[in-house]
Length: 158
Image (cartoon, one colour):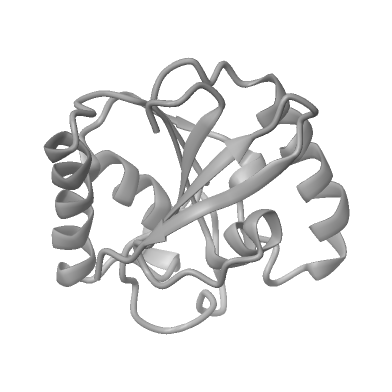
């Protein structure tokens, strides 16, 4: 995380179940699958893990889903900036190719000189890193000089 071009890709913390319930709405947390009490505690521990390793603040970007925004906020590493390119495409797989390409382009332009964290969903983490993360898992990523992205390691937090 301290190396230029590095960033953390984090799957949101524990939110029981799979997929969102019928009637899902992005602007209504009550209509979404949300963090459990364990997921909220896990989010706090993720932030503590960063601080224990000398990272007290970071640029934090999050999917617009409540479970991602809550994970990012509870880590208390800095202001959380919603980024639609980090949103899930699980329910509409036809969006995957265009969204991941746009996300790669956007990451290629993000200033990665300081600690940077992206909180998102399993499907997005896997598409970018080829890693199938557990809930709250951190995947350390590196952006190459050519814009390529590669997984450098992973850290489960559950």
